[in-house]
Length: 144
Length: 365
Image 1 (tube, each protein chain N blue to C red):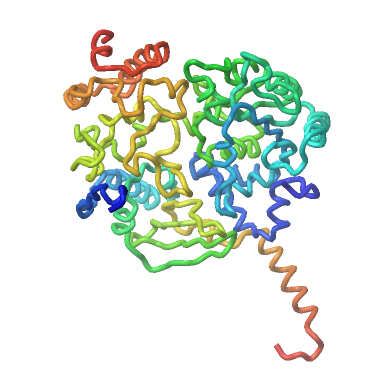
Image 2: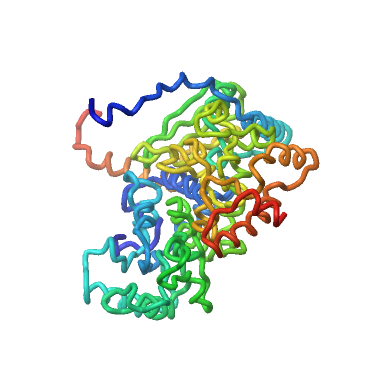
């Protein structure tokens, strides 16, 4: 028996049940107030979830409560992003990832439509130029 | 290094084929990184689009390179790398290809070409005991710093060594180490403390300068308020347990397994100001308290001499629960009171380089 094998190994007990860190409920009330504002006067609100002191499981509890709504979208620009409406209309969950797959932003937007979903004027101009060029390069008589 | 043909960050990103929508996403992440509210995203986008490439000279003195590691050892590509790529890093011992006289020449050329506008980043403390303790190309750290800072717009002291002296300054401070602010008095000095600092915080300060062309608001220790404005304790996800008086007494008891407050195990969260609780480490994976270990207080001055990482310095261990209950009932700012007590204990520990006992605290309280 080697010296190392003489060292007793303590088998850890199964992990304790997930704790509630009580950080989710205040945030849900903040979202509720924001939704009330949106309904009353159309004011949009955005909350940066990466600035929240979440403990293990807090984020999952938040998303479980918010659930999934009617609409979700994927954005592929500098990495993947997911934009989805929660089961509460007007409450959106937006997660941005870098091209390496790392989460770089996580927001709740309480709005009619997140701005990131709208086509930007600069991109419309670029799209116009690209389409024009694509049409001009079509060979005469080539079926489309 | 940034492509010298591009002048603004917007141009840099467009050259990389980034759409406007992608740029807005980048700005959202940058605003989050700078701890700005999401409502600031349009302003950040407008400013970043026109942000020019600042020249940055990075000086390494009495340090372990951990601060550079913190910033550069991220899995590519990250937001930090995009910001870092955009600056014109004209001098950095560890990263640059050139060495010896060629490296020093690059520093001098950058200083000359960007006089009055370049940023100086310093990691490591400066030894005053003997100029020979730490030199670069035969020039003392003190002389290098004074020469380089003379034409700088501002100085960013990265890491606790540069900000407060750090480990080299710990008792008995054999090299006579001092912080950047002990030497530089005629330029703005931003302290980005931490051992090491959170990479997002280092980049966040650079991004703030890029975005607004100004330096962020600073606290009493010269640290940016948006990252160091709140104590670890106040942002800790275990804070509700502290408020209820539920503490881990050892690292493997029921309280530890249930994720209760680590205050009794020496957590320095109440007296430590940093962004670990929200920014986290290793690409947002976790941070010390989430991993079951108390905060060491590494972003605070003289934390090495604070009397022991596992001593609950502020309040005698046996009295924590009772004191917490009283404080909660009275609505007192326990963190502030604890910090006050702690500062006295730290002062004594620093002087004697010894641990602080409960008896010591009781004598002083």
